[in-house]
Amino acid sequence: MTKPAVLGGDPIRTAPWPQWPVHDEQEEQALLRVLRSGNWWRHSYGQGVELAEDETDLKSEAARFQRAFARHHDCRYGIAAANGTVTLEIALRAAGVRPGDEVIVPAYTFVATATAPLMVGAIPIFVDIDPDTYNIDPRRVAEAITPRTRAIIPVHFGGQPCDMDALLALAEQYSLVVIEDAAHAHGASYRGRMCGSIGHLGSFSFQVSKNMTAGEGGIITTNNSAYAESCESLVWGGRKKGHAWYRHFVLAGNARMTEFQGAILSEQLTRLPEQSARRSKNGQRLDGLLAQIAGIHPTVLLETTTCHSYHRYMFRYDPQTFAGLPKAKFIRALQAEGIDGVSTGYFTPLYANPMFVEKNFMGGSWPVDAWEHGRALNYADFIERCPVSERACASEAVWIPQSMLLAEPEAMDDIARAVRKIQENAALLAGAASEF
Ligand SMILES: Cc1ncc(COP(=O)(O)O)c(C=O)c1O
Image (cartoon, rainbow, N blue to C red; front, side, top):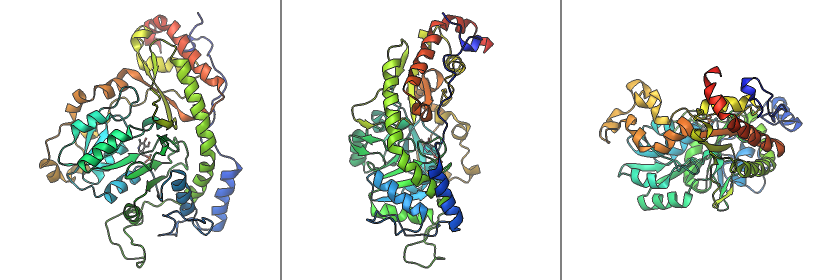
C-alpha cells in the first residue's frame, strides 16, 4: 500500500492539467482588431438580434457573436449581455414576472438563479433535486406549484439537460413560463434539442469558469420575437427600435456586452464543438472507471441527454465506504495526489445562506407587501423539503471542473487511481484526519 501524498507519500499525478481559458493568436487577433478599430463600445442597437443570412454586414462584434451563438443553439434570437446573472433578471422581466409572483428554482444551484426572481420582486421557491442527476426534480416542482406560481427556472446543472418533457408539461398545464438557466450548458442537448431553445427563454453565462468565456458575459436565447424585443430593450436602457436614442420606454439598466467580449466569444465559439467532444469522451471514460469503485457513484448520464456539456463532472461520494473519511478531507487527499481542481462544491443549499434566512433583500425596500399577501415563507423550513440537496452539500457531491476534462484520456485514469489509493488508505486517513 503506497503512502497517501497528503501524509507525505508520492502523488499519483505530477503532470499539469490543461490551462483555462484556452486562447491563442485567434483571440489575440480578435482583440487587436477591436482595439485598433477604436470601436470598443457596442453601437448597434436593434441590429443582430434576429438571425440573418449574411452576418458579415454587421459592424458590431457583439452583434455578430449573438447571431452566431443563437444559430448554434437553434434559436432565432440571441441578446448578448454583460453576464449570466443580469440575463436571468431580464428574461424574467421580459416574460412578465411581477412582484409577488412565485418562481420555482432548484435548491442546489448558483445564487443568481434565486436572486434573479428577487431582483424583479418575485419570490424564489426552492425545490429539491433528483439524486441521480442533481437536476431539479419535476415531482418536487409539481408539489410546489400554487396559483401564484408564474415561472420555473430549471438549471441544466453541470451541463446535463433537465427533464424538460416533464417540466414543459407542467408549464403547459399551469400556464407557466420556463426560463432555462443554461449557464453550464453551452452546446448541450436534450433529445437532440439544444439547451436554451427548449423553454420559452434561455440564459447563458460566459464567466471565466464557463465552457466558453470572455472573463464575463451572458446571452439570452429565444424563438419568441416579442420576448427578444423586450430583452433587447431591457439590455439597452429601455430603448425601443425605431425611436430616438434618448427615448426610454421601460425601466431598465445598461447590460450591454462590450465589443472586446463579443470578439473573444466569437473565437471561443469556434472551439466549442471540439472541446465538447473531448469533455464528453473523457466524462464517459471517467464514468466507466469510477463506477467500478465501491462508494463512488457518478451522476447518471440519462438516455435523453444527447449532449452533456460537462461544465462539471460530478460524482457522489459515500464516506461510509471510506472508513467515515469526511468529504472535505477526501477532497484534500485527492488534491494532494495531483487531482488539483477537484472540489466539494456548495457547502449548503442556497436557502441556508444568510441572505435568505434573514431575508436581507434590498435593505427592507424589497416589496414586502407582495410577500405578505403571499404565504408566509420561512426559508429555514426548506431543510426538511430538500434532503437530496442537503446531502449533496454535506457529504456527497464532488465536482471536477470542465477544464480537467480537456486533458489527455489517460488523465482520467489518474483520477480513478487517486480515488482508489485514498480508498485503500481510508482507515489510515480517517485516523489521521486531524493532521490535514
Ligand atoms: C447556474 C448559474 N446560473 C447563473 C450564473 C451567473 O452567471 P454570471 O457569473 O455570468 O453572472 C452562474 C455563474 O456561475 C451559474 O453557475
